[in-house]
Amino acid sequence: MRAPGSIPGIGRLIGELEALAQISEAAPPVVTRIVFSEADMRARAYLRGLCEEAGLSLSQDAVGNTFARWQGSDPSLAPIATGSHIDAIPNAGLYDGCVGVLGGLEAIRVLKQMGFKPRRSIELVIFTAEEPTRFGIGCLGSRMMANALTPAKARALLDKDGRGLEELRAQAGFTGQLESVAVKPGRFHKFLELHIEQGPHLEAEGLDIGLVTHIAAPASQRIVIEGEGGHAGGRLMPGRKDALAAAAELVLALEAAARSTGAIDTVGTVGVCDVFPGAVNSIPSRVAITTDVRDIDRARRDSVLDALGKTTEAVAARRGVTITTELINADPPTTCDPEILNALENSARAANKKYKRMVARAYHDSSFVSCFAPTAMLFIPCRGGVSHRPDEYASPEWIGGGVHVLSRTLAALAS
Ligand SMILES: [Zn+2]
Image (tube, rainbow, N blue to C red; front, side):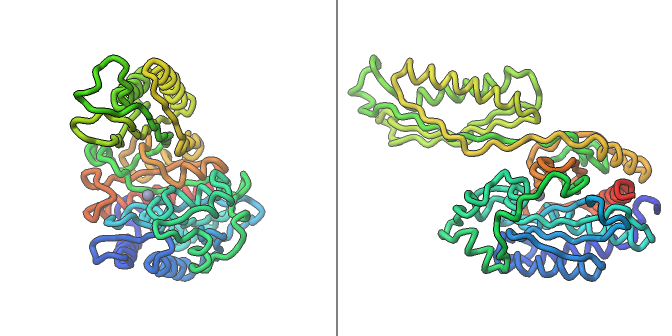
């Protein structure tokens, strides 16, 4: 392949990224593209057009996941797949997700132009609704492919206006049975996702590529503590059932449990604390907190939840308060596929790119694809680590480097 930085078509790719960014619910440079919005539909049509121009054959599933296939010489073999998402949270930029979709398409076009003939088919995937904006649940399309969200639960999803997934997907033209979205292991032989880092490390260290070895995943809970309110002066300390004092014990217990694993990858956070009635002279009677615990190791993450659960019981008994815990989600951490990582490393070396192995701290469609296919990710730098903002930026060199490594790796895996 060609020398780094001289990928044919990088100007074409940058132009397409910029054109896609124009398809937005907000005035440029702000990108807002909520799933099944008019902008999302136009963006999907734009992508389908580019895929057809590239000679790929298109299919879509019942929730709108889109597959663009370059048929290999042995169609009986499961394809190598790559892709990401094109939906964007309100007030976002133009690289998150889109680099993995348009960059994946560019990698395929480069291979075609070079006359490469894949043995395995290569598939570009555009996942529906990686962002949780509309339905409050992230990675909708890949989650359903992994059957980590059942069709029954998907049918119950509503947006803030009370419009359901069923109504919205039908209006968008996706009408099949939701039961048909889940795929079997073997649907993809391997899957890899190109994505901006959304953190500062690659740029700060002067690196071109991050090879993602693990994707951390969160478990989050809502914990409600019911105590007894009263006048802050009239009620003396003996016998008080202060819900906030009980919550404070839980906050510190979570911090201690996350530290106690001794692993740098274990993190625990309480980011919400609602105090009722919230008056300076009133004992808190009801407090709701949320906990977010993340790790790359599921057992270790769940051990933090167990430790917090034990403290919760002890605090409830000792203080005479009622504590209820609701698990909001517990998503699977991912260990990336060593074979793909080796192929990526060989490609990065051959392309003369500076790289390191690293952990992804935010989750991605890859998290769910890894439930049914060997998966890995490659990161490229983004300026200042900024993402989910209009000033998100990745340079053409960074993007070109990522596409170069991706195309070499697709070729190696599909041969
Ligand atoms: Zn993303």
